Amino acid sequence: MTEYTLNDLAQLVASRAGTSPDQSYTAKLLADGPAKAAKKLGEEAVEAAIAAVQGDRAGLTAEAADVLYHLVVLLQAGGVSLDAVMAELQRRTAQSGLAEKAARRHT
Ligand SMILES: N=c1c2ncn([C@@H]3O[C@H](COP(=O)(O)OP(=O)(O)OP(=O)(O)O)[C@@H](O)[C@H]3O)c2ncn1[C@@H]1O[C@H](COP(=O)(O)O)[C@@H](O)[C@H]1O
Image 1 (cartoon, rainbow, N blue to C red):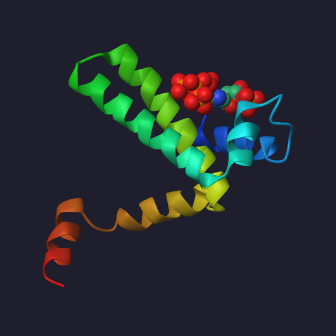
Image 2: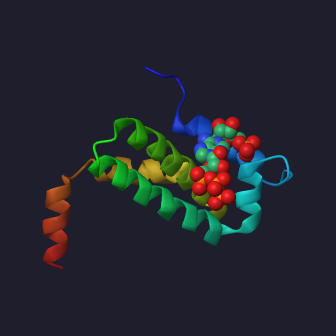
């Protein structure tokens, strides 16, 4: 199992903020503002979905990596920490997804 984590990626992305867009794709995305990163995330998500439906495992692996990278960039652009997202996911472990969905339907 790889030792590389999303936290490592988030730190790398954060380290690129404010650096030269000529030297770094991440810096360029961040300099372009959240709308560009959001557009890229949407595109990569669609490509990942298509690869999954086609049974293209190599494609899904590559597109999923693009999705995670662009999501981490969007979090950086939006001022939300990966830790906050993980805390939200941890909070959700207290309830099953089906139970949460059912509770929402009755409110
Ligand atoms: N993980 C990634 C990563 N995944 C995908 N990408 C880039 O995301 C882009 C994917 O978009 P497309 O396939 O649509 O390519 P494109 O047509 O060139 O994109 P656009 O011109 O539309 O922006 C490509 O340019 C990829 O290189 C990434 N760029 C950077 N990283 C990580 O960030 C680190 C720092 O990179 P720099 O910021 O460039 O120094 C790298 O060492 C990697 O670890």
